[in-house]
Amino acid sequence: MEYWKDETEPIKAFLTLFEKARDDAELSNGLKKVNQLIWFDYTEDGPNCSFWVDCRDGKLEMGQGKPAQDPDLTMSLSADDAHRSWSNKLNPVMAITRRKIRVKGSATALLKLAPKLKKVAVIYAQALKDLGWEDKIMK
Image (cartoon, rainbow, N blue to C red; front, side, top):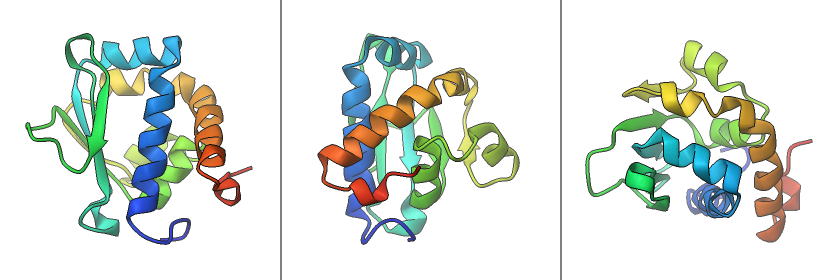
C-alpha cells in the first residue's frame, strides 16, 4: 500500500469520512436515497480491510468488515484507489470502466452521487486532519 502503513488505517479513515458525511444533510440524504447495503471490499490489501454502509430504509449506519447480511452492492478496489477516489483524484466512472473498481450489483444509485465528490473530498480531508494524518491529504 502506498498511502497506508497497515490495513486498519484506511478503514479508520473511511469510516470517519462516512460518520462525517452522516452529519451533512445533503450527503446524508443522498446516501439514504441509494437505499442499499454497500460493502466496500479492499481485502486485496488485507483480510480485514473492508467496511460496509447500510443506507436501507432511511438509515445510515456503517461498520468495519463484511456486513452480516448479503450486500446489495459490492465495490472492490485497492485501499489506495479508494483513497484517490475519496480525495476526488480518481474518477469512479472511469475507474469502473478500466476495472480499477469492480462492481457487483447495481451502482447506478451510488454513481448519482458522483457530482458530490468535491464535497466528499473536503469532508475526507477534514477526517484525515482530525485523525492527525495531514500528510495523507492529496492536493
